[in-house]
Amino acid sequence: MLDFTWKVFCMTGNIDSYLLMKEIEMDQDKQLPKELEQEEPSIREQTS
Image (cartoon, rainbow, N blue to C red; front, side, top):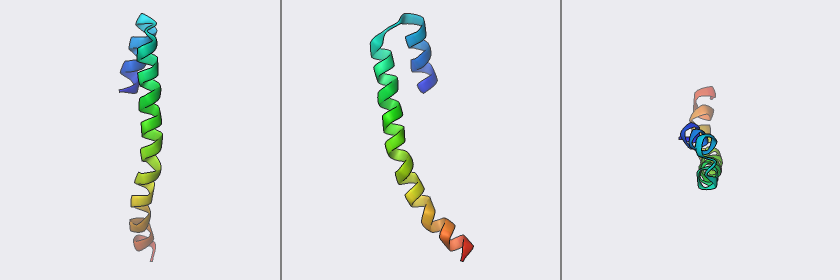
């Protein structure tokens, strides 16, 4: 999705495309720590 919005921005110069890409990036950054927290207990169980 990020690649698509970046390509649209590059081709059109549409600032809304750029802002959408940044919003998606921020959402992904927020989700990443949550995903790591969910995976961490299973990693602990495997090493014990």
